[in-house]
Image (cartoon, rainbow, N blue to C red; front, side, top):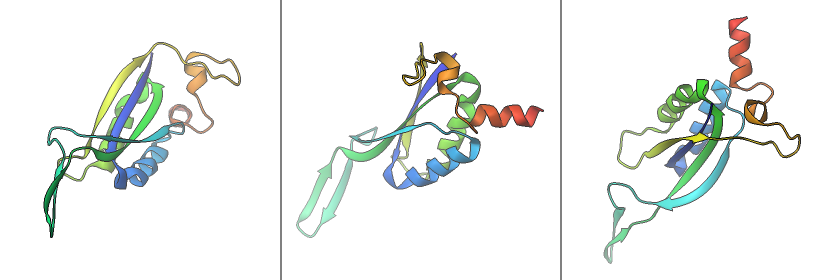
Length: 128
């Protein structure tokens, strides 16, 4: 089975998260700038002219499609690299993926999400 992880994190934690994902062998991912708000409903910024509310905070969304075997390791890597201990660190969604098709080769399923040197190949080498 295949899953999709959608992680919405602080912009300033992106490089740390990418490094953590690379370290565990996550090769393919997409990154999109997003704006949103969570439980806090935004932040209040105090200036000389008074306070104002920013209710749509800039964040980064990371999308990763991977096999079920790699979901927990990926979640751990994202959480460990993105956590600051403060409200607004982000959220992770895990969704089922019915199928994956690599357009250039026509590969489907797990073969379409396998990359040279990725987490699956690293695990196979460790078992051998």
